[in-house]
Every structure is written in C-alpha cells, then in structure tokens.
Image 1: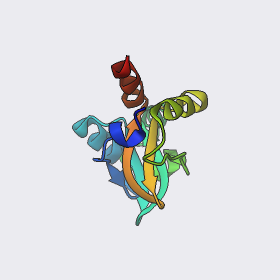
Image 2: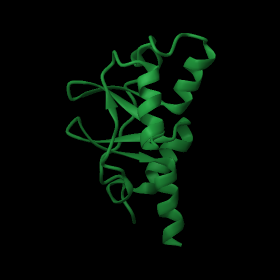
Image 3: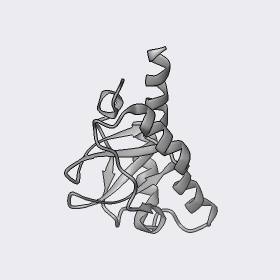
Image 4: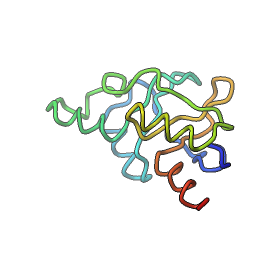
Length: 125
C-alpha cells in the first residue's frame, strides 16, 4: 500500500498570516499550487485554497489589502507521512477538501492532494 509520504509534495508554499490574498494568488499561479499554508513561525495557522481565493474575489473586497488569515480555513486537518493513501482519500472526500498538509511532530513536511492519492490508487491497478 502507498503512503502519503510516497506521493506528497515536499515543496509547500507558505505565507505569514498578514500576507494578502493577492500575494497568495500570485504564488499559487506562479508555482502551479492549489493552496498555500499560513504559518506563524513554524505553527500551522491555516490553509488558503483556490476556493478561498474565489470566495474572497466574489466578496468584492480588495484582494491587494485582504489578509489571508481572514479567508483561510483555520486549523486544517493534517496527515502523518505513514497514512495510507486510501485513508487520506477517504478523509478528503468525506470532509470536502482537496489538500492535506503532512506533518511530523507539528512540523510541516509536505502537502498531499486528492489528485496525488487518487493517482496512486490508479497506478496500483
């Protein structure tokens, strides 16, 4: 069985809570990422996803001034690297999200997406 560590991306974009939604969108587009992790020091405060950026844009708030901590999902669910990809997929599908930060002892180690875990399942067939 594949684990989250087998399919996760170690290169995770992080921003401080006072970064703007515009900053987040710029780095997400530039790097081809679907989310950014909001950190205060090494502590994960939240996750900002493409959906959150769309919600912020729909609000007509100035995204160049809107802080990511206003639009992020606080205290996101996380996974350990040894979590089976099927369990990760089940978690994401049942809870309605597509990105899961991977942590060890509270420290961010990577990101796994629904696409990553479903691709691992297809590859096993």
